[in-house]
Image 1: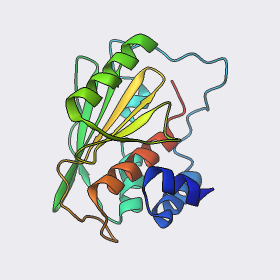
Image 2: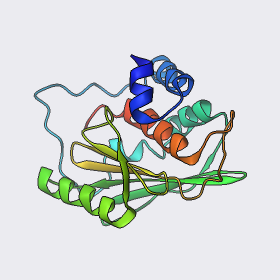
Image 3: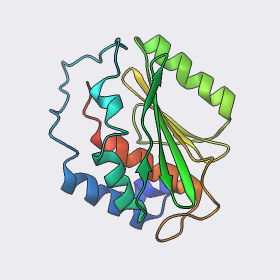
Length: 184
């Protein structure tokens, strides 16, 4: 199953296996799992816990374990329901952002607008409720009323331990973060 998923996402099976083990072992916090009767929450006055977790200590730590590199995380910013921080490494930067929206229609429109703005290189199956890789290797994922952007534009041609291309790094980061999202 890991091999089939890795092939669909274009990631080395070893990376996907490592990420899967890390996510399962870490448990990604103590947030309760969303149930079938739980509805997504619309964007509120303040960022949701789900959005804030991408810049909190656990997600960057788990990403660091998966990439073999430790990041310093910048102070998050939030403007117009877009929660953003950067994972800064000695030779690279990955920008993570979560856009909170209030309906399926808004989420779909924003998700599609990023595809138009950044260019869609290929769809990514089995990730969130829809995902694609952009022409620069970044990853866009929609889940509930949120859209995650893993911006790979600050990565060199090879990064991590072992060295990996920016597209595979962005997919790995997306997998780790979504593995921790239990809904809101």
